[in-house]
Length: 126
Length: 424
Image 1 (cartoon, rainbow over the protein chains, first blue to last red):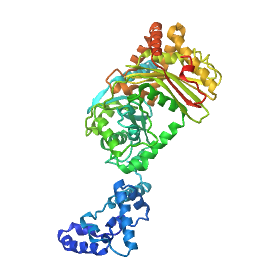
Image 2: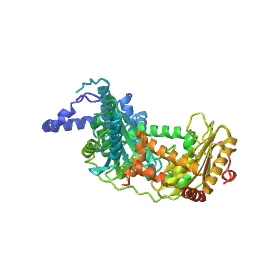
Image 3: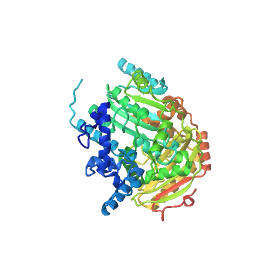
Image 4: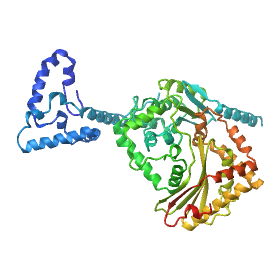
């Protein structure tokens, strides 16, 4: 629930089949209505990147992923300058909007947590 | 008196017990317990630089030691080992990769687990490669490139053996090693039949049991292929701004290393037996003041490189030193005085024995023998050195000198002598 990036109820929702089925259409509609896909962005492009752990995670993307990320930013800023969305055929499709960065952020977060654990560990002699 | 005798007999029993190599779950295990207060366990893998498919892969794999495995992260390994007070290290030679843990007696369960997980379940994540491994590799390369002696020996290997043994221990300064190369090399070499475990300060049964438990999941691997080594020789010069001018003149042989070359190293070695004195070897009296020389004898499983490394602050000193070395070698190929040979044999025996006394030397001396199923006892080595006769010695030196020399000059390349100027 308390991940590295924000507070989220999604894991709890996903546990229950009926609640998930109830909320999924709403979440799909909400994601589409947010407008980032219309600018050629994926959801993980919106993650707050002015943080050490997210910066480290961005560094772990492979070459293709980080190139594509920069390319989407270029396209989106051009769309922003022109004050209009991309033509519809260039919108990011729902199935292409994958969480490419989140696993890396979580990995880095786990490492930071582990470091904190080792930094404050209480050793007991058996 | 009795106590002394029983101690002596115990010592001989222990040294014999080292020679027995047991098979634990397909992994060869050798251990010796001389009653040291600490233990050390080394996992040897036949993954030296001679087997690497691409320049630098072996060095990168070496620096991947103690990184994340499926059972613990790199940080966890370091912190937990610190809590136990152990020291972890990895070492690469041309033949083997050695991963070592030194620790207090009683902590073997944990440290054998750390060593075995590197072999059985390393994760080899791409970000560890870029975040921590490649910087370490680059730093090692940088440090080695500033040391003229290391550079000369590396160059000499490249000239002498070209491929295989000629591959450098260090990565190129801009290695093109990807994580897939490392994974492929590890998959090829990490496995039963290619791994041996050497322990000191730990009993053989205990180590064998631990190895059996921790390496049970290890897949079997075939011995990595490497074509039979051929000696080539040649000349090379490399510019380097240092205070020390360096030259190496050497010769190589292919085939199993012969004891004659070990004796030759002892015969020529100008290292004095007493501090602040001049040695009595034929080379030491001929060296100009301020010039240092050391004999380099590097035996490998199917070849050996013998030579003299000469260093001095002035180019003239190096020139004189190399000329003296060549002359001493030529003299040794025609005749040798019996007294000098006696001294050389004693020196070679002592250095073979004293190397086996410290941990690193012991591992290095049994490494090749462990993974090729031959006799690992010190007595056998001593006996072969003892058996060197004067005629066999001069014959061996003469046939060594017949091959094309390997000559390397590192330093001021404008002034350092060329191979045809040193009296070859």
